[in-house]
Length: 432
Image (cartoon, rainbow, N blue to C red):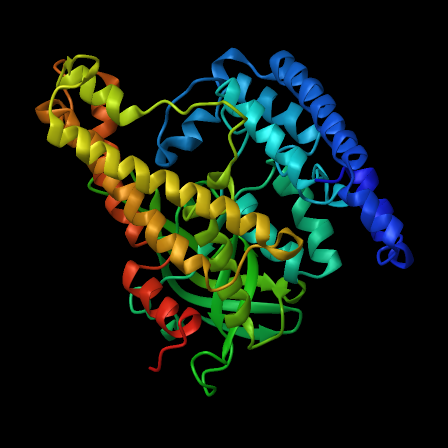
C-alpha cells in the first residue's frame, strides 16, 4: 500500500501511469521495501503514542453497546477522546480538511492493530462515525461536511436515526412522518420508533414525507435536525435485556433547516438506502470487523476457553467431543467470514463501501453474532442463563445479556428477511 506521499505522487502523475518505467517501479522490490519501511516506521510511532496516551482505564474493558454512554462518561474517557480527536484518529481515514486523520488504508489498519494489541477501547462510537458521517462524505454538500463532520470527529455531537415508524418498519417506504416546507425550514410532525440512543443524541438524520401525492419511494426527503428543540419528545423503550437503548420519538412542529436537506427534495430514498449500506457494512464486518491480523498473531478462541472452564479438559482438549465439533464449526465460519470481508474491502474501488452486497454481510454477520452469543451462553450451562445474584460472576451475567440482546441483531439495520429480498433482487437478479 502506497504511503500518502507516494499516493499523491501517483495521482498527480497521470502521464506517467502508463509508462513502462513507472509500472516497473510499482512492481519492483525497491517500491515494496520502501512502502514496508514507511509502514514499519508508522507502526513504531503509533505504538509509542498509544502507550503514552491511552489511559489504563480505557484498556481491556468489556461492555455492551447498550451501555456505551456510561463507559464514555469518565474523565479518562474524555481525555482519551480529546487526544485521539486531536490527531483525527477517531475517524482515521476521513480527509484532514474535515478533521479526520487522512490515513491511507494500510496506516489505518496498523492503527487498528495497535489499538487491539493494547486492548484499547475506541475513543468514541456511534451513528455519527458509522452512518451519517460516511453518508455526508459521499453525498453531502461542502457546507454540510464542514459544519457537521468536525463535530463528529471531536465527539462534540452525537447522532440518532429517524427511520422506522409504528406502521413502517420492514416496509420503511410506507413512513408517514410529514415535513412541510415553510420558508427556510421544514416543519415536521409524526412519530419515529426504535430510535437508538435518542435520549443521548444531539442531532437526528431522518427520512420524512415531503410529497404525499408521489409514489411512496419518490415523495421522501432526507433531513438533519437538532434534537434539542421544542417539539421533540423522547420516550425510552425497555427491552428484555433490561436496558433502554431504543426510544419512541415524537415530532410536534419540530424544525429542520432547508440547508440540512441531504440530496434532492423528494429524492431522499436513495440517500437513505446508501446510509443503510454503511450501517450494514459495520454490522456485517466490512468496516471495523474486517481487520487484518499481524503476521503470526493468533486470536484466542473464546469458545474453547469457556468450554474448558465449564466442561473441563481431557488431554489438553475440551472434554466433550460433540462440543469440540460445535466450537470448531462455528469458529471456522467466523474466520471464513472475516477473511471474505477483508478480501471484499481490499477489492473495493477507491476504498468505498460496497452497495447491495452489504446485505450479504449483514445477513451472515447477524446470524454469526446471534449464534456466537448463544453458543457462549450454552457452554456455560446453567451459569449462562443467570440474570442477577451472587451465584453469577460478571462474565456470566454479560453472557446472558448478550444472548438476549443478540436476537435484535437480525432485526435492526433491516431484518434477515429484508436482506434476503435485497440479495435475491439486487445481487442475484431474480424476478419479483
